[in-house]
Image 1: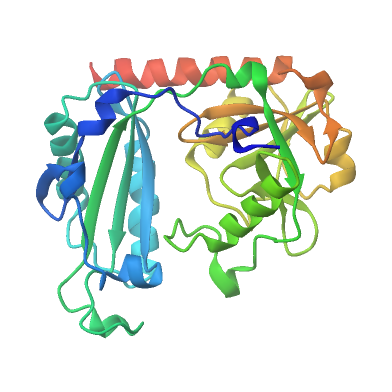
Image 2: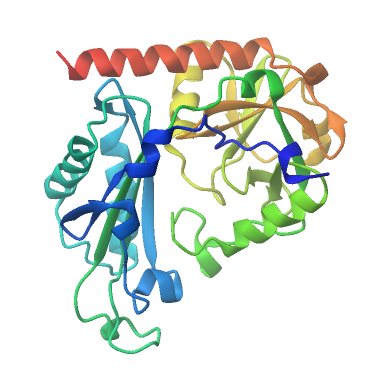
Length: 311
């Protein structure tokens, strides 16, 4: 199997405008070719940093408050001084969008590290110049054919760990656990890795939150060992508001292989159907009715949010 046979929940149509985007680096807006950080930066050297992915729909940053809540909560836990308050960081995000004349179908990655270090060691007190903040905004529209193509998952031996090792709720620059899992899945011929929790229950993929549908009811993990996804929570809320039974619970691969539908959630792709898990076809290899209903409700939510923000 070649790399071209694989798909991703982050597949997007090529956009030549991204060749000349401008990137925010510590208060400066520079061409992407000139966007650089020091080799002594904590993020480059140690993965000591946090990030958020955001979407811009029709001039509105979707669920911005929830993303900022998660970012600043993680910074507090890490004793990482972002160096900007929420309003200042929001202004920097909008400054980046204006510099690129971006208005819709934009994906942003907001990254904050502990900053440049005096010596190449891990002690946080060696980061004496303050945080590094980088904001990348790209023209990026999800590939809508993914609804017809679906995602193939492979269950891997690498699990999402206990909070006493590295809490999965931290959207950290340290992603090796997920990358190793993804490489394992790719070698098995799949597109993404299905990861279990420390007790063997189905948890999440290397990049997205995971849901199944059984007899019209939506199941997802307890949330104890996975990223506290913004889109994940919006899907749960939409189910509750629209009389779709939804359960945050422990479930195993037995329940998963017998599911009527399966899908992933994430900021970039919103909802993506899963057609195959460990070589077993799910839902006849097509997106099911519950998936389509949730996807429609989510699109309506985005439209409502945009309309409300514009008054």
